[in-house]
Amino acid sequence: MSSLFPALVAGSGERVALRFGDRSLTYGELGAAAGAVAERVRGAGRRVAVWATPELETAVGVVGVLLAGVAAVPLNPKSGEKELAHILSDSAPALVLAAPGAELPSVAGGLERVNIDVRDVRDVRGAGTLPEDRAAEGDPALIVYTSGTTGPPKGAVLPRRALATTLDALADAWRWTGDDVLVHGLPLFHVHGLVLGVLGPLRRGGSVRHLGRFTTEGVTRELNAGATMLFGVPTMYHRIAEALPADPELAKALGRARLLVSGSAALPVHDHERIAAATGRRVIERYGMTETLMNTAVRADGEPRAGTVGVPLPGVELRLVEEDGAEVTAYDGETVGEIQVRGPNLFTEYLNRPDATAAAFTADGWFRTGDMAVRESDGYVRIVGRKATDLIKSGGYKIGAGEIENALLEHPGVREAAVTGEPDADLGERIVAWIVPADPGRPPSTEELADHVARRLAPHKRPRVVRHLDALPRNDMGKIMKRALGDA
Image 1 (cartoon, one colour):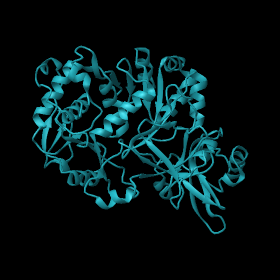
Image 2 (cartoon, rainbow, N blue to C red):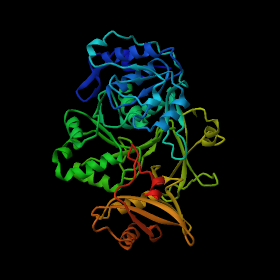
Image 3 (spheres, one colour):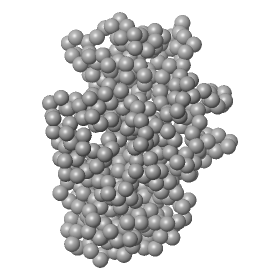
Image 4 (cartoon, rainbow, N blue to C red):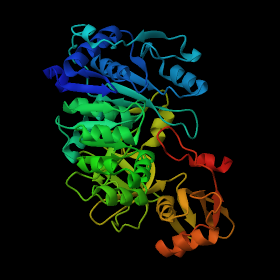
């Protein structure tokens, strides 16, 4: 297949490819540094682990592994030793790449370590040559481990075809070109930060500026300095929305961006509206998973409709199905079904788990996402939650937790909200609202919140139980861990 990074092959020379803080590499320097990594890992084995700290070295390491035609296994530096031991045992990497100063846990002590040293970019010029890309489109490119909410993490094997397909489809949807400069502060062990946030700009021949750690000050600085796109998760955009009233410079900077993109979880409508009111720009959303990369997106030339994730990307087939497997044909914005997708953007298997792989697909090749959604009359998709945790069956109705959470967040007494269901002898399930009050000393009552939701949605969608928390449990990507709420 053609190269994943044509700009490296073409030799874009002095154009800056990567910048992390005050450290940067041009395309020429990246080609030399990544070429040196490729020379080192080629022939070492089928898989190479990368200690994925938010540093320049991680990006160079992953690009080098991909240039060598080997599969990269990004490791989350915050993983516990038990989880990390499982991932290393399951993926059996030949060696681990890391920044020189990174401290690896003892569980990785048995692996050969190779340091990626790009501290003095002058020393990497000519250090490596770009190998000929002989990899096939179906060859593994990344093995990314899922969050493991129902057991040990599973390694989703993403082929090179999936990376190229997703990034080219997003380029079509967002008019993403080599002139774009992307800013973000996302972790690099996950699809969002690594594939979209680093490999995406490099495939286009553009630039990425990584903040290291997300701050609104960093966003302001980079957008004022010419960045054109911002990628973030809802937690980041919530912090932006909270900061905007007292930070006119942030509002001006966001107003200059060509695209503001949110992903990895649903962005509450309340934050959508606050950002739009302050900046004149609307955040757009897209929908993907580790196993599928990107499935849908609000297009740059489409309507940035709050609460939706747009339309299927080029090459992606998407359908909604009922519990009995019948396809949902009503595009009425109300009929809920599970999202199933099919296309070249999908993973090939869960590593060493043929049972889980077989269970994830239908007989005719559709991947069961476990996400529940409705479709509007124009094809826009609106996700209402996960089948396992966000679909509540109460009083004969199928209710998505997401719309109730959005309604709760419109109440001035609610800072954060999550909604789950719990068994009820009469209703089947009753709706439970988990609330972080804006004022812990004066939390809103159950009756007040129930009336608030019933007025905005429908009476059967009102919470029957309200529980107050100091904070909602979240993972590294800012997603609420609803399975942990029962222990709160």
